Length: 357
Image 1 (cartoon, rainbow, N blue to C red):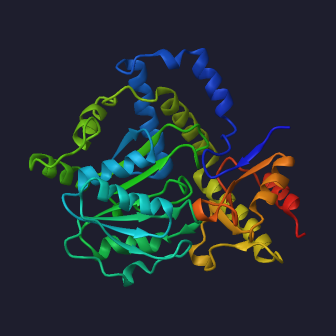
Image 2: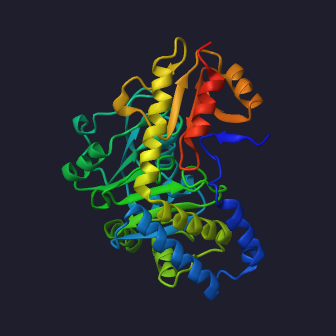
Image 3: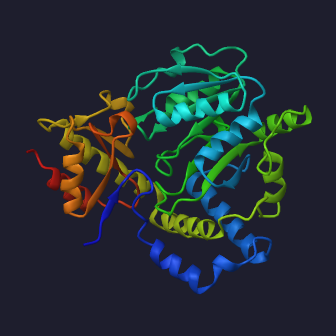
């Protein structure tokens, strides 16, 4: 029996990955030079198709990194001299804040209980803030921040805005004129093996990085924005990159473009409604995020009242794998991914196995 992975990352592989991987191996893509024309063509094509899929304007550069945790670190290094401001409501938004502290900045945070959202425009942000950091979809709790609220932040504060969409891309649809830095990894919504992160950077953020570099601020090492930009101009990376993952990302982007991003987003909405309707009516298990406005459509967290291990085993016996709760919620919660690789039939199967008993 083949497992269906509703895990929050790594997750179910996109249906076409197997054939693309075979093609890559048949063509020896794991052995090509990252300084050669073949890789440059792959890099250029991947950027082009990702730009089309997510409607990324030319004002924003696309960089390939190793992980989203690295993206957090590079953003802080390149865009903050002294102070960043962080909205914290879970483990990964807290990591963003922690990285700023580890990098010897003076970050400020507004923290709410895990699973809660924010009224972003009701929160006072210090005048010395250089960068506002928002985790749009908190993978650890299933809490999500509405895009219209994030868009208002940029209008009300003349500082850089960085947004983590690690577990909501490609579902989430941004107006990139409202944000400066966006990042995600491929092992979730893009249904690929882990090992590649995408960092999208506005010209404004590049200018801030150049300013800090000229001022002598430590920008890190091989992944300063200036080094990424220099190599990016010739469709290369500063280091030896994950060529295979960039190739697979390009192929999956093409597949998603052929399917239509509107169709993909509609399917995610329909599947999330199916799951939430089931658990809203369940006599025992309930969505962890109480306010529907702040419920993630892509990483759905359910409070199963101490029965996580029991449910995980029950599902696994039917070939279904979901994530346990994160950290302190390990025994009480389950997390269900809802990515483009997941079909409605598979969600019906998951719901039927859990049942109302």
